[in-house]
Length: 71
Picture 1 (spheres, one colour):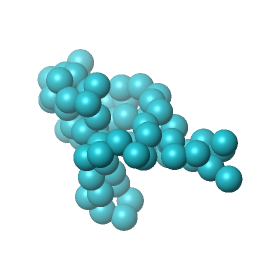
Picture 2: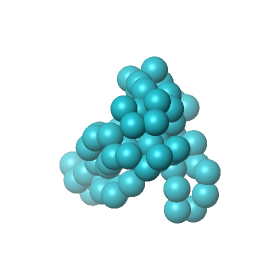
Picture 3: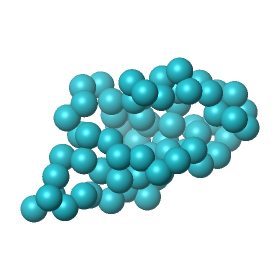
Picture 4: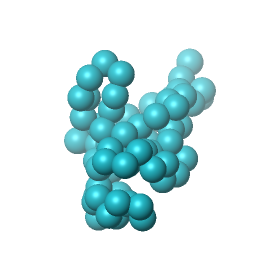
């Protein structure tokens, strides 16, 4: 059985800079938009204003290395 959270890296959608390892609840409304079967773009409340250190893009992150967290 798995919880409703995923463990992941956040990667800048523009320059592909890895920002951090994060945990996202799948229950958060409007937090995940499916762009394709292989890519997810995250708009997390905590990161909407975060600016990529490398290219200065604000609040657009690809989720990579997704792992479901067991209960």
